[in-house]
Amino acid sequence: MAVAALVLGILALLSSITVVGGILLGLAAIILGIVASKRAKRGEAGGKGMAITGVVTGTLGILGAIGLIAFGASLLNSQAGKNYQDCLRNANGNQAQVQDCANQFGRQIGP
Image 1 (spheres, rainbow, N blue to C red):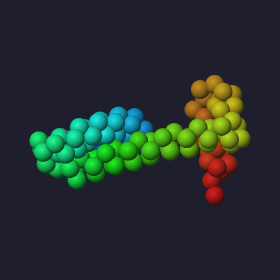
Image 2 (image 1 turned 90 degrees about the horizontal axis):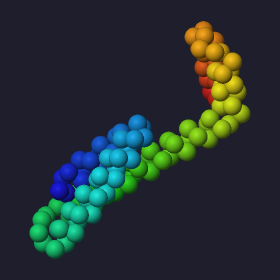
Image 3 (image 1 turned 90 degrees about the vertical axis):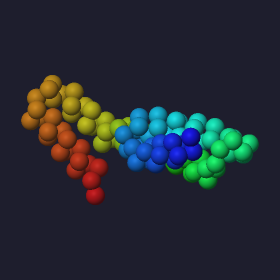
Image 4 (image 1 turned 135 degrees about the horizontal axis):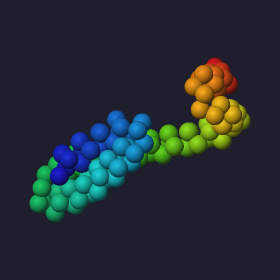
């Protein structure tokens, strides 16, 4: 169970950019890590260090996903994001105009 927590924690950390993967895998890693840690504490299993590392990496995966959500929300709520949303609404699905909107958005948020 400790190995599974460690593996899921590492996967949560790596997939936190997908947001859903970071949160789901992170939660699974935390749950398995806590259970494995308690079993190790009672002497029923080994791998307490791996269990703790699974909890830590799972937590970091969740925090990374939450950070990306917060960043995306703040970006879309910025003036550049509002301009982009308005531009997309006015494009009415015209692919050339949609691409122009994306280019304009990139210029507004770029360095």
